[in-house]
Amino acid sequence: MARPALPRPSIAKAPLARGRALARTAGGGVADVLHPLLVVARGLRALATAGRRGWERTPRERRGPALFLGAAGALAVGLAPYGPLLALVGLLAAAGWAGRERSALRNTPTEAEAARLRTLYEALVPHFGATDDPDPLYAYARTWETAFEEYAFADDGRPTHLALRYPAYFADGDPVARWRVERLLAAKCGRGREYRFDWDQEAGRLTLSVQPALPTTLCAQRFVTAPGEAILGFTDPDAVRRTVPVTDLDGRADQHAAPVLWRTGARSTEPHLLALGRPGSGTTTLLRSLLLQALPYADVLVVDGAGSGGYGFLHGRSGVLAVESDPAGALAALEWAAHETERRLVRAHEARRLGQPAPDDIRRPLWLVVDRPAALTHLTSTNARPGPQELLRGPLRHGRPAHISVVIAEQPDGAESLGPYVAAATRARVVLGPASYEQLHRTLGAPPPTSPVPDTPPGRGFARLGDGPVYRLQVPATPDPYDDATSEAQRGAVLALLPGYAAAPSATEAVPSTAPPPTPR
Ligand SMILES: Nc1ncnc2c1ncn2[C@@H]1O[C@H](COP(=O)(O)OP(=O)(O)OP(=O)(O)O)[C@@H](O)[C@H]1O
Image 1 (cartoon, rainbow, N blue to C red):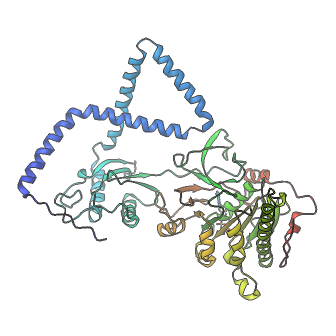
Image 2: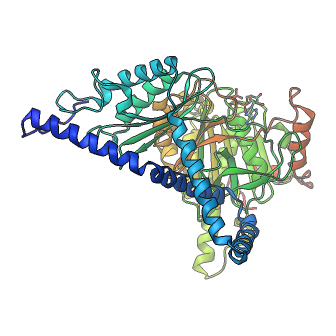
Image 3: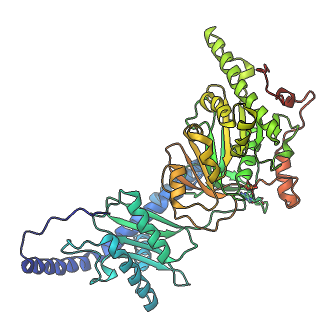
């Protein structure tokens, strides 16, 4: 990328160099005198940040008691003889320790570590250096100490933390320029790990840190959510403000996890969801998880375009209108959904005209869950009936006022054939499994917060709701209970969430298997 030319210095070089040396000596002296103060200030800042993070991570219901305990402790210290003085000394000691710990990030590196830092620095010169800068931060003639402020290494010698300064003229607002630097650092620091890059644009500082894997020990269960809320999966504790109590696969209860919550319904700004993932990445599992969460308060209609059979366990359950996995039935179900959307809109409109509340038969939410609609597109040409895309249009366009949520799962190569309408109407997005930076950026509309890695466990990916931030995501395990490979514990967990069988006549009969007339319910 063309870098803007820098203004040429207007003063002579020798006086400039002398002045710079003088400034450096004076700066060094002042830094020595102020060093203890700086350590304490840095420690105070670290303590404040840790306190804020701890507070954000504390579940709301525990904040009251925590506040009470804190206030009681402060009162006890205030009333004790010499209490405030001792507290101040303690605080300064703790700040000194925290500040000292932080500066330990910059211990003298071993020879191998120094070589690694030198390699990193030199690799960054083409990106951060500029030939017309008279005093460049990055140049082959200089050393890494000029730009690297903090670093830490794992036992295997690979960097786990790096904080560096970059020049003001680097285009840090340009995602492509940033991505080039991130890709380079991820490659040089060691592939196969997930790196997070925090660009402090105001200070011109970039921090790289290795991200721990998201826990994969959560399985389907009754989550504490409001009607209309669905948990897409779980993310980093510091990425969201809310936590929910969960029980993990080992049966350990009383834990809290950070959910990525998707709000559906009439007030949702992202009423429909699109999940993309390569085969085996876990999109069917995500859909199963969402269906089990929706069933307590909504009717669901499942269209299994690929005919995977992964939803068979839902057949006949209360609230399950139909599970269609053969192409003809799938198209008929989509046609029914299109008519049902119209019916709901007409009924809502009538009620509004008469000044009455919305009638009961349109209030119960309907979830239209479509797994791999692209597999159905070939039917359009042979049957001369509207194809899945056209049939999805009504529910996608009018779903919100009609209380209809559409959830679509597709493979990345099939997403192209879904057409622009589906892409425009699905503002809640999930990408599961391995995906390139470009794919993630294109699908989510924003760069991922961490460098993508080639090997991810099933159900691992990224999620974005509308214009919000991009979250790392791990979907809770929700296997097909009729699959032989499913463990007893997971089978029991899924079956426990299923509603009872629908009383005869089954609601399934509401969904005809041929092109239907509008069906009043
Ligand atoms: N969140 C998860 N936690 C644990 N295992 C998972 C998760 N998601 C998927 N799996 C496992 O990965 C495998 C593939 O999952 P799934 O069938 O959901 O993938 P898919 O993307 O729908 O692929 P396909 O289209 O091939 O069915 C299954 O064995 C499933 O149990």
